Every structure is written in structure tokens, then in C-alpha cells.
Image 1 (cartoon, rainbow, N blue to C red):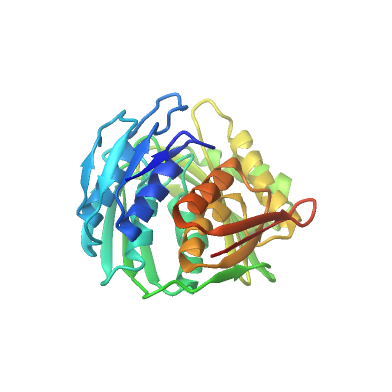
Image 2: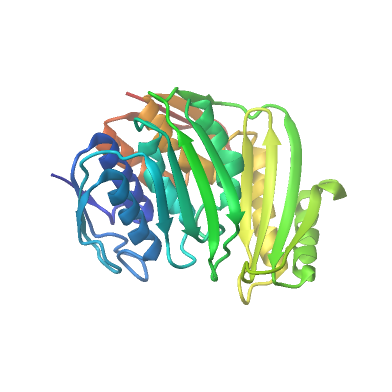
Length: 339
């Protein structure tokens, strides 16, 4: 049985999720040790446990060690079971990270699937629904599968309570993806969403973002939600180009001024535009697994994060891929994967 050290490199939940994904795809049993060992709260948190349970449901797997706080699990899948599945995080934990765990296996399953995901849809330190819908899924669809994601109700941290549905029509294989330029920029927009919070929070964020980005006033819009969404605030900046849409997201936090949240995320968007590459930091990390499963592909991006380099090394170890990361200018890197 293959053993994966969950504390290597960046040492976060991505090691757990990718290892579970590849165990499902290869139908090979795996032991994962030292899960999130270096974190302030090591081991499985609620969303990580739900990811394990979701993978076990999809894979009809035998699992040991699946409990909150556990730093070691053994996972033995027996199949890939498409169809209708419901996954409840049970808190504001990220439903999108649960989806990230099971989606790669369902992309090549023998039949379509429909997933219902309950919990957080807009979480710090996780890809929010908008990123999935606008940036990631269009590129995965380009590789062959047909995937549709619908946000029924947003769930903001810390209240949660969100609901999303995802339909997956798999493909026999994934086509390689090459993304070396973003092409002409078609639209730019910044939307500040507040749920059960004063509208002034959104307006302050938009003013701070506009000061950094210098875009036309019509690019900045508030969105006010009332009702059962729980208190929450998210600033979403989307840059739609000919070949790719990139999404940058900042979340309001108690004790952090709206201007600080907005300035940070606007600077990320500004730096992405200045680099002239199609793929931002977080999208680069998300594209590694589908490209590795396709067998080859390439993209240009900003400086790879430690999260990305850890993920890339894990894919080398588990799939035997060859991967080259080359700096091609002061602000741009070329990532190429093949077998």
C-alpha cells in the first residue's frame, strides 16, 4: 500500500484531497499520515472529514481513521459510483473543497452524476463558487466533460447554510489543455456583496478597489442580500479575456477594515494584469490535476505558490508525470506537464 506523508511541502489539505482523488481514479489503496501536522489545529477538520466521506461514498471505499482531528487515514476504494450524491459539510466548511476531491474521478466515470453540496460556498482559504463557475469549470469543459454548477443559496463564513448543485457529464478521456495567452480583455468588473450587513461596507470596498485599479466607474457594483444567508461579505473581481476568465476574491473579516480587504484583492488583480499571463496563482494550482490526468498540457502564470509546488511534486510522485516550471520573465512562469 502506498503511504503519503501529509506534512511535506505546504502540508495542507490539498495533499489529502489530491491523494483521495487519485486513489479513486487508480483504484489503488492508500495510507495518508501526518495530515495537516503543522497546522494550528492539525488533523481532519469538518470539511476535510466531509471530503473523506464524500470520496468513500463515490468509491464505495473502506476507510479507517475518518474522524475529526485524525492525522492518519487508510482509504481502500472498490469502484467509482456515479449518480446522485448529497454531501453535507455540517458547518460553514467549504463545499467547493469537497467537490474538488470527488470531481476528478467523476469526470471519467461510466455515467453522469448530480451532486448536491450543503455548507459554505464562499470561504476564506478556499475557492469560492464564483471562481469555480467563471474561471475553473469553463477550462475543464474545454477538456471534454460537460459540467454545470448552480448556486441555489450562498453560504458565507462563519454561518454557512449554502446550497450548490453540480451536474457532471463525463468524457472518455481528458483533452490536453494549453493556455499560453489570455487574448483580448473583454470585460472587467468588481462586485462587493454584503449579506445582512450595511450597504456602506460594499461601497467602501468598491471605492478602495477603484483607487487601486483605476477602472471606469461602471465596472464597480454593489450587491445587497437580505434574508437567511447569514452575515457575510465578499469582494469579487473578475477579468474576462478571450481565452480565460480570472477571478480574485476577498472576504470581509471581523476587525478588518473594508478598505484593507479591498486593497489587498485589488492589488492581486492589478499584478495579474501587469504580468500579462492568462493564469493567476490559484487557478494555476487548480489546473495541475486535470492537466496531469490528460497526460500533457501547459500554461503561463504568475510566480507559483508553495501550495502549487507541493501539489506538483505530489502529482510527480503519484502519477509519474514530468513537469517543468521555468521563469520566462520578471513576472511570468511557464508550466509544462507531460508523461
